[in-house]
Amino acid sequence: MKEEGLKELYVDELRDIYSAENQLVKALPKMAKAATSDELRSGFEQHLEQTKGHVKRLEEIFSELDEKPTGKKCKGMQGLIEEGKEMIDEDLEGEVLDAGLISAAQRVEHYEIAAYGCVRTFATILGEDNAAELLEETLEEEKETDKKLTELAENINLEAAGSEEEEEASTPKKGRAARA
Image (cartoon, rainbow, N blue to C red; front, side, top):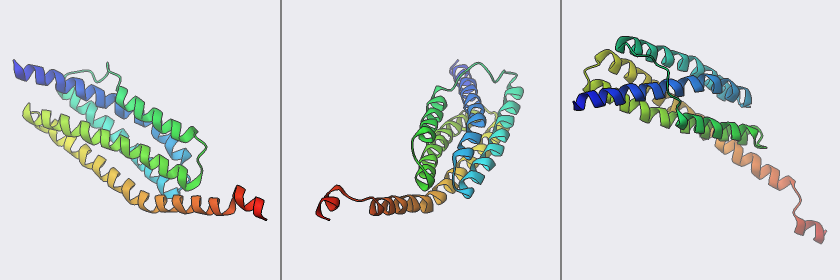
């Protein structure tokens, strides 16, 4: 009886992730377009292709389970994507915008890492060995994407801090104008 409840939870969580991945397929091109760094833009474009592969893996798992993948809207991903959209809509430029995009993207990756870790564990417990392998493969790709974003952030965040310092230095202070 308990195993049946876990299987229902597993399928429900898979539907949630399926919804999340499909939302990302629509959001990643917008993030790529907004990025000012060629390297970041390329990273978003590569992750889009990878995400399409994640959708196909999930569809394979649903086929093996003889279940439909649709029927649930991932509200968590919807919120994370909305925050990313707000970042794009704010009046940020250059490296500061890119730093914000990386921040939004890493929140997405951490959400996915948590989700895939859970469903992979459920699959293992339920004896869904092929699904567990597919989910593990996706989990490792999500972790790798997070690592790449961290590496990009190391330079972009420093550049963003430098561009703000340059902007402050070129903007006259109210007190200075009065003394001149």
